[in-house]
Image (cartoon, rainbow, N blue to C red; front, side, top):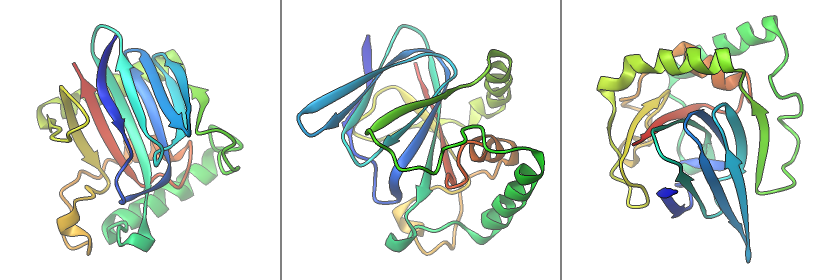
Length: 198
């Protein structure tokens, strides 16, 4: 296996709980909790929820790994949702409420462990999302983070750049379908990253 994301904690822009939707590829997610290291095998379609303030990393098997990663912006630290995006999120939540309950019923309960595998996306749905994401291939840019290698990224909803903490500029794409997809799992997720590791 190849380590493509080394141990790191997520930035102040994010609250503690994060979500990962593994759209393609497989590997191992590791997270440190004190002296303990918890490892979770990740397969295509797996959805995990984890404490992103604890050191975590990802090792992938051969091939390309495509993941969606979601966070709740840390408003007390000055990272909020842009007004145009907030209105869309509210519209999406009303649509979801009329359709069905959240994909994971106990999503708001307290986490007992630093990482939980909470769901597996059906194969047909997973392939549809993967095909849908292809439209953004040419818009991916290299991730310059020091803890990752060979990763291309694109932000959705908000790009939590330190320069734009006051919410005056939004470089990210607001994609209703992707935002609706993730908020079916948890309506706290309001910023989304597409990451592709080769």
